[in-house]
Image (cartoon, rainbow, N blue to C red; front, side, top):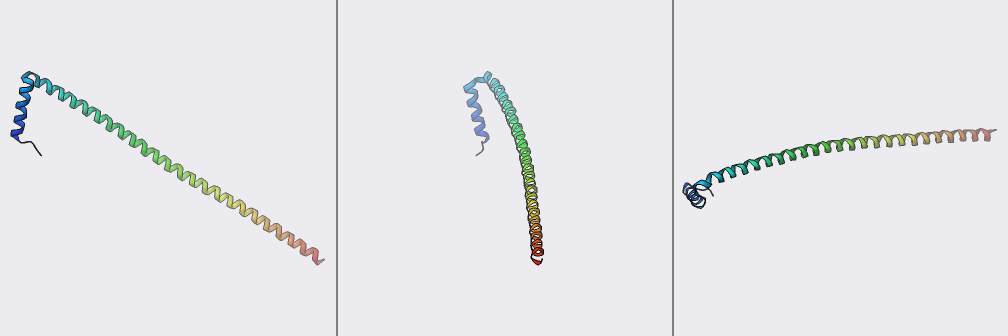
Length: 109
């Protein structure tokens, strides 16, 4: 739905009749200022959105690093616990073997 030349001319005639020849330049200046102000505000909002997006991406990367570090730490702790348990089991087996050997020697005598 575009405006043809006839419609534009009709709109201009109505504007001239309503506002008069002296008011039209003032209206045009006001519209120009409003348009410039709108453009500045839009650019400021776009800049702020860009900064917030960059900050969110940075925080997401840091969060991902922290999760990876936590997983690595948990794996190390789990491995350390398993190793400690394995050492205890091995020590217990050795102690049991020594006791059996001692009991055998005593029963043989």
